[in-house]
Picture 1 (cartoon, rainbow over the protein chains, first blue to last red):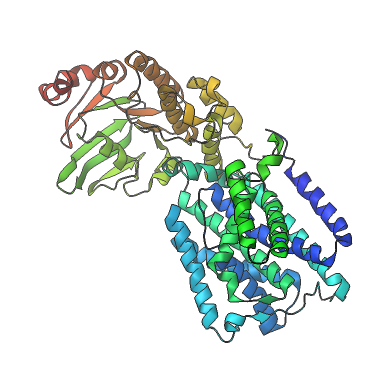
Picture 2 (picture 1 turned 90 degrees about the vertical axis):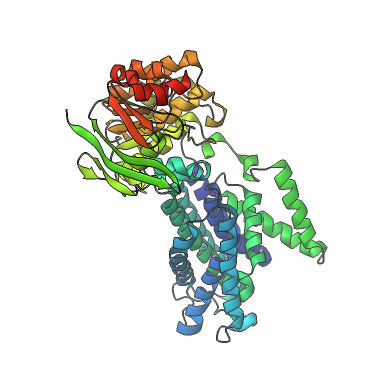
Length: 311
Length: 257
C-alpha cells in the first residue's frame, strides 16, 4: 500500500493557513472562511458522487445548519461558534437520518430530484414562517469563542481559524472513513449494487450512512456561513444554492478530501472577480469556467495535482 | 452423508408461468451437483430462491439446519452461501485486485474486524491471513494473477467469468452456486476453466451446484445431476443414470443435439 500522505498535507495546509491568515486582509479572510463552509458541503457531495449519487438538494442541510446556528442564538442566546456548528451538524444529521430511509432507496435522477424537492419544501416552509423572518431571514449574534468575544479587528480571524480547524478535522475524519471498507464501497456501489449485495453488504445502508455524513458536513458548512455572513435567509435552501455546491464539487473533482476546499476557494475567487469586473454577467464567467473544466479536466482540478501517493 | 442444503416443496409462479413446481432437493456436504435443463426450465429460479433474490410462494429452504427461506441475499451470503452469475457481475471501473479487496473489506466489516480505527489488515475469517494475501492467494488459484492491475472492464470473457467466481470465494462460502460458469467461453476453454474452478473451490472444501448446458462438462464434473423441465425436477441421479433417463433425453439433451 502506498504511504498515506494526505494527513500530512492537511496538517501542513492548516498550519500555513492559521499562521498566514494573520496577514490576510479582512475581505480575503471572508472569502477563505466562506470557502471552508462551501468546501464542507462539497466534501459531502463528493462522498455521494463517489457512490454515483448527485444530490441537487444539498442546500437543504446547508440551510438547516444555518438556521440551527441562528436559532440557538435567537432563542437561547448562544453565540459560541463551535456550539453553532455543533447545532448545525446535529440538526442536519437528524433530518438526514430520517429522510435517508426514503432517499437511500433511490438512485440516479430520482435521488437527485427527490433531494431537490425536499430542499424546496424547506424553502417554502421558511418563506411562510414569520417567526423566522420569512423571506428576510434574520441576523445572527456576533460570534464568540469559548465565551470570549474577540475584538472587532480579531473577529474575522477568529472565525477563519475556527473554520479551518473544524474543516480540517472533518476532512481528516472523512479521509479516514474513505479508507474503511464501508468508505471504499462507494465505487463498488456505483459500479454494481447486485454484486455488493451478493458479497454480504447492504448498498442501501451504505448510501444511508453516506447521506447522513454528507448532511452533517453541509450542516456545519451552513452554520459556518451563517456566522461568517451574520445573516441567514431562505435563499440558502433555494435550488440555485444547491447548484453552486454541485458546481464546486465538479470543479474540484473527487480525488482527495482537500479538493472540495480548493474548489470552493477557486469558486469564491472566480465569483468575486467576475462580479467585480462585470456585475451583470458574472454567471456567464462561472459557466465558462465550468465548461472548461468539464471539457479539459473531467476529473476536476484535483487531477492537476494528483500524485499516486495522494490517492 | 450430511445434508448441508435442503430445499423442500418450492413453488414459484410469475403470472401464468410456473417457474418452480414442488421443487425439492437435499444437497449433501462436499458434493458437486450439476443442474441441467433448457432455458426457462427453472434452474436459475432455483438458484435465485436459494440465494434470496426470489422468495418462493411456498416451501422452505434450510442451510445447515437453519431456515433461510425469507432472508435477503446479503444475509444468506454472510451465512455461507455464495453465487456467481451467468453474466459476470464485476466492479467494472476497478482493477481485478481492487475487486477482490472490496469483497474482502466487506467480509472484514461484517466480522467486525474493520472499524474506523483499525488498519484493515486483520486476518480474514476462514483464511487466517490479511486481505492482501488472501486476494493474491485467490487470484493465483483462479489464474488471475497476471491480470491484477487490469481494469475489470477490459478483461476477456473467460477471465471475467473467473473473476466473478473468485469474488464469490472471498466470503469463504460453504456452498457455492455457479450459474453457467462456462457460458460465453469457447469450447476449447470450457474444460480447462471448469477444471480450474472446481479445483480451486474444492480445495477450500466448498459444496458446489453448477448450471451447465454442455452435457460433456456435466458428465465429467458432476457427481450428481438434477434435471429441470417446466419448473419441475424430472431426474435426480448420478450423471450416467440421469443423462440416460428417457425424459431427460427428450426434454433436455434431445433439444440440444
